Every structure is written in structure tokens, then in C-alpha cells.
Image (cartoon, rainbow, N blue to C red; front, side):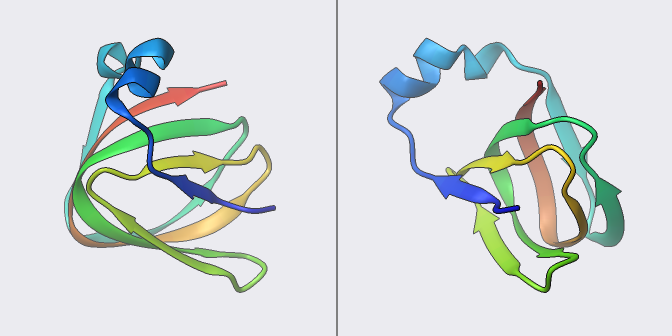
Length: 89
């Protein structure tokens, strides 16, 4: 299961309606997470490294569009406070 990190143009973000998605915030922390369904998000602020149960480490931050696959188990390492638009499903 791969985490996909992309750069999307403002036109692509508008087409997806990203700016109307809810916003989630998180302080500097480390926590376990499991995705019961796919999540897509746009990172507005922050510096994050996610470690998958398969040993993969993926880092991302401001401006990145990230897709987490359904069924993924991982550990979030939030190095700088996060603010993101997100959508499940």
C-alpha cells in the first residue's frame, strides 16, 4: 500500500473542490493511525513523516496533495503543527 504525494495546480484543486473540504489540525505529536477508507488531503501547513507498517517512510508538507489508501496502518510523526483540507472516501 503506497502513500501518494503529488503537486496539484490550483485548477485541479478547484475541480476537486478541495477548498470546501473540512480542515483538520494537529500539534507536534506522534500517533498510530489506520485508514478504514481512502483519504485525500491538501497540506496547508506542517511537516510530517508517516511510517507505514511495511517500513516505508514518506515525508510531506505545505502544498502537497496526499492520498492514503484504504487499509493502511501507519504512525504519524508531526514535526511542525499540521493544518490540512481532507476528504474520506
